Image (cartoon, rainbow, N blue to C red):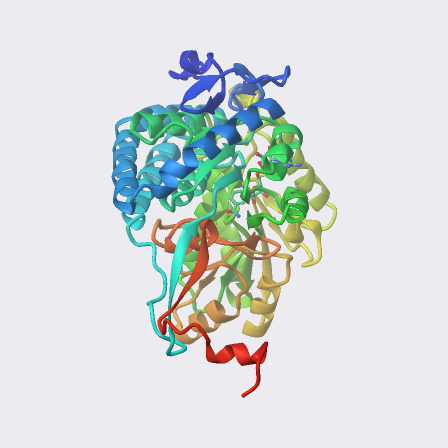
Length: 505
Ligand code: NAD
């Protein structure tokens, strides 16, 4: 079992609040201990942010806004290119910190989280120069109209613990590329890589105050940030339940709101699908990040002729997945984020035994892994569509599989949860694929794959999975506002339309 090894720990001992370009101690009077989920051992204790720290961070962001919002797109682009380069140089430090605080296998941090973040920074460095408005024109004949796309101001963002680095990147990069400044609150369980990310931004030359991090609890620092009168926009990623609360506060303040919420992605396998591809896709799609992924495959609907072979294939493949120490290169999946979350996941599976069949998994491994928050890959079959296991977000390494007969039924069941974040369809028939991509209500539908994401493509939900987009040029719709500018071209003092108010013809 690995020892706690987190190189930036000493530096972060100075404090876990990054405000106006420097690390500070939180002033809430309450501390939080980050626990290594692989061992249950404490990693680091830090002072949580209080409302005064949030006020200081918002003030720093507000002070930085005039200069940053007036920087040319080229200047912002240069700073973000330098940022991407610093992130690339420091990649291994991010890998170690992310794996330690989340319990992610090194190979996932090294091949997915960190390179994805560097690529995001490079994408937004380029995109900063491509903010578009519609063309100018003389629409009335007597005026010239054009559209200005402008930043919104200080953005307050709140992020979850499952991909802390990528979530920080998805929030911070489009916001600052568009000329906003930002205060991000990471989950109190996983502050480290957000702090390293903000430090790297400063090292790359982004002005102090453009990127600020407050590491605090949701109820204290989080709600204060959302409701802060100097915060013009709230961008939230997390559960649908907390998203509702955040929406209430932001709506009361009439703030721009972007919500990336929970998911319960369907995985629809038609009877002409490549079974081997579907089985491998389902296991990878369900178990990535120990299933703590808002787009993870969670509900496999398999057309009756393939159902038994799919269940057997997934169960066999799941049994080969190596659960273990995230720092062991042989490990496929690590622990869940915490013991409390593991117990919550186990609770779903235990209750499912009363109405469904647990085909494989359904237990925490013992032996050397017993002190960690581990849970074995689990397949549940024959659960009713309206059961908790099919409807609720379990957020663990648990896949539920159900049969269907007609294509109509498969697509109806796929849409039958409150969520709509992501989905996949597995078929070799282009017409079936086309119908599935049209009819499944989700912000992303993959065909014959499940999980890959791209900096160039939008990520975001339908239905109770929220609204607004992360990544891609579409994210600028969230982080900019549109102004119509209209010039009179006639230089005539008495304009024809005035007669609608005074005078007669
Ligand atoms: P969570 O909703 O419990 O917490 C998310 C963040 O909100 C944390 O920083 C937390 O401190 C903060 N928070 C909690 N209560 C708050 C309050 N009252 N006011 C303001 N902030 C508050 O979610 P989590 O457990 O950290 O993460 C898992 C959830 O995130 C899952 O539901 C998952 O689907 C979702 N998620 C969604 C996406 C997406 O892109 N749609 C991506 C990743 C995770």
